[in-house]
Length: 190
Length: 281
Image (cartoon, rainbow over all chains, first blue to last red; front, side):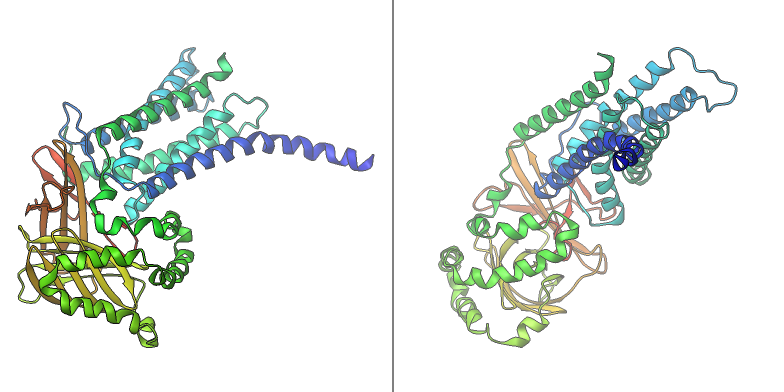
């Protein structure tokens, strides 16, 4: 009996962990699967061009920049929703803005990732490339975690902001190690 | 319904990813592994090194596995036909090289060879006479070499490492035989009927061998560059790399900072072929 009573509070604490463990495991598997595919698959180096852009590098850089801009909208709208912006009360459409900017950012990032994985692969020949490869895989894992824990209720208040911040930070570093590097090396062009 | 929307977002992204991946695959029938027909026969025998390579964390543990598998490899007969079939084709230079190949197993007991030969190394430099450059990358028991004069004479070669000796073969009867140790690789290489002898040293970061492939108008083009320590580079480009006798032209200049080269509208993304890091193997 006593053991059972002792077990109750930890069970409650564990239930938070239990809610997080499965999404985190799935997210880890997603990141791992992308990394393994990127490493095992021999990169084709193929560069399919999209009309209006001069090279796949520019297409990817602009898509990634778009995703990053929408990610900034994510952070701002989240701050407003959480009432962290002084003298700004959350308008009714802020939730929709947050959801749709997130969806668009994610869908912009997917083609970039596919091109990276298929044409270039997981590489480690320089620090920039290694960081980019690792975080590129981690991003989709972290995003998966965010999406999977989003519908869960009764989570501690810190969980979503922390996971969201991780996703945002990872995306920004990915952008810095790719599109920012691309534009600062080649110049901003279409 | 509302609770499912994040999942729908995820699945939409996943479906978009799969569709893009499949369309990329359909657009680019991958013939890359076929391009080294001589080496391709040897590939299935040693899946362990390539499958162990993906994880950087496991890279160090894969090294013993590679060296462990090499004695077993020399015992099996499967690589022998591939090399012997290539040997008659390169007949003019064959006698000296086949004796070198034949002496490799005999040299096996020599302990000094195993002590001084690195399992991972990159070498590059000018060939004797300076008419071109050669690069050799050793990764475990595999090696890749490229010789190039910056124009029509060039050749990719692959093969196995046995007891500090390299006997690598490629298309157009390209052949390299060399011995190597910690700081240097020395030997002879032949491509497009041109013989070179060489003795070149290890290379440092950003110099070495680079390759890029792309599919243009239904053909696979493959470029190779050898970048030397002083920043000079030579590069050639095979206009139909899947052909049995690829023809090469001068490659566009490789921008080493961005790892790209440009031919008209096509941007080639180069990757280093490095035995030290294992990229390109």
